[in-house]
Length: 189
Image (cartoon, rainbow, N blue to C red; front, side, top):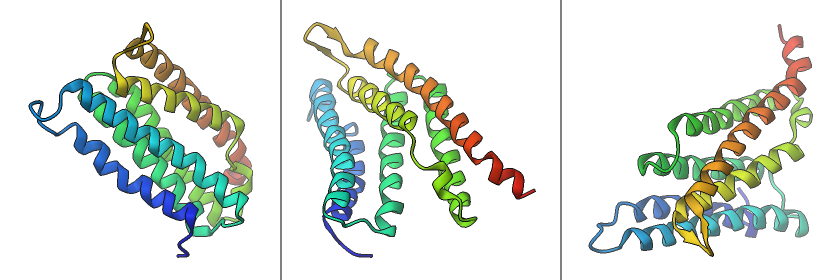
């Protein structure tokens, strides 16, 4: 494993996960709900920015690595899963929606791993649909974590709506990946 700036940013994202979760376990006497929401939103936003930044820097500085390509999506999925579980626990997200999103991530990760083993990983590279899904998902999670009114906007209501849209995009993108992998899946019978 080569330590470079992109990989350090990915490790930072992983280390932010327990910090993010711990915020909600601090007593209400120490931190008000509003402060917990604000801190958790900030930590999640920092993680989302490092997700974009590590990929950008890896390409710009020519510091891509097999380890970074493996670790980056793991960090993303752990952060999203942690946020969804916390939001379900707080009653801000539907458990079925969380299951759909987390289940899709596990399914596609397994599919990508298998496709890499058979030498066909390029056929299921990240698509524009996957990027749109991720954008909706991140916006929804940020709004649901913030949970308060912002500039007259009910963040909870907008976040719920965006999370439902991201769940639909999640299913659509999963079907898209499975269709693209179908020729290889049929060969393996």
